[in-house]
Image (cartoon, rainbow, N blue to C red):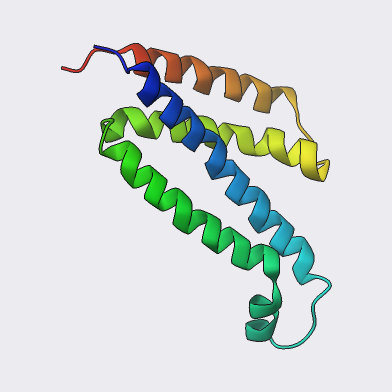
Amino acid sequence: MSLSLKDTVLCGIFAVVLPAGQMLFKMAAIADASLDGPIVLRLLKNLPLMSAFAWYGVTALFWFYVLTRVPLSTAYAFSMVGSALVPVMAWVFFKEALNWQMGLGFVVIFIGLVIIARARPA
């Protein structure tokens, strides 16, 4: 039995919200350059960093909900797609370089996700 539409959508949402948190961490790293003072004060004044921590708290709760419905081995495959989205989002938002190897890797990950999502449990 493959994933229901609802479970597929939930896993897909998680695959997108996870790299969004990585974008917040990158924004925090950029913001850190404009802050001064001791590291502890810079961390406390870094709004993107505090936002990233809050985002990960919310996504951890969402992940917990997903895992009440979907086997970890299947759900985690979607998080790998999220990891593959990070370079694309970094390219869009931060103008970081992409290359054909990254594109090929994303295609391989996506094919693996399709295979896993359609697999029947043993």
